[in-house]
Image (cartoon, rainbow, N blue to C red; front, side):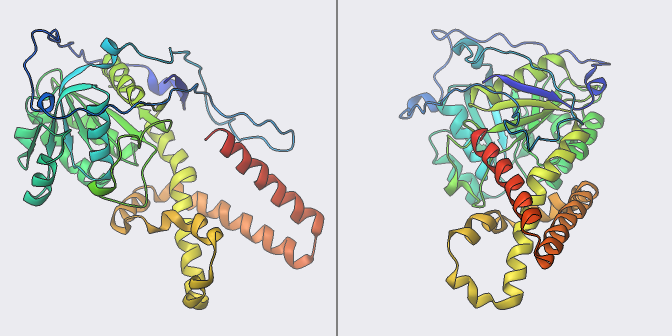
Length: 371
């Protein structure tokens, strides 16, 4: 997939004190050893390819507020050659939940890595992973899991990712690239810069904008990432080579990649991801406070609008509190919009109400077209 854009203050993307990431010589097909994965039945999943591009409004009555962004079109090729996309010998997935297991399936089906290890928190999850055809080995020992891997992907909740960075940085081998799937980037990337300073391994923050209100391995899918956005958040300490390889990793899974500095990332996702979740939760609370029995009479409108409110409450508590500054501003704007609609409705101002609803309708149609 092509790069979408670079979003944010481009000064934050100037690489200083750059680390070098030695490339690992990959064995030829004839000489490489046969892994456990190779002895299992192989199922290939194909991914659609599509052109990236930042949405632009086609209506003169509505424009997306992009003025605060610095955008650069990068014009990368749409399809990567197979030898370029197969970049890693061994990858370790830390946390085989919905995203972690889906990632394992996707990496295996696309042949992006030759061997996949999994770190699982408990014995039950460890055994579940060992039964999966995409998992070569599962362990509950984090040091063992990451020690000899070329790629480590942290797929645990945000607070756990922050707590694991020191150990992963200490135990990862020279040349290893570590990334994550966390919904917050400023907190994670700041901690990672400290943890990986003067280490042989390096870190690149990632946020694949995909998932579901459903959780766990049982809901995982190898196509979860296809045609979805991925935000990659480099800092001044990020290795350019590691950044290139991580962007290639997400593209190989069919994602549309956008670079964004960690601070801007948290502002943007506060509006387009975290605010919708709080809005859906508040709507469910409001209806239930009025009369919870009315939920049995609802149609698709309430279900569609509040789907994300069914997400893991513990996970979302961490995300909301971790981005409370941006969310407070976003909630204030939402409340102002609702108050404006309320006043317009109470005054019976048909034209103003129609204009508000039409503006929202056009924006939602644009979202469909650029989905």
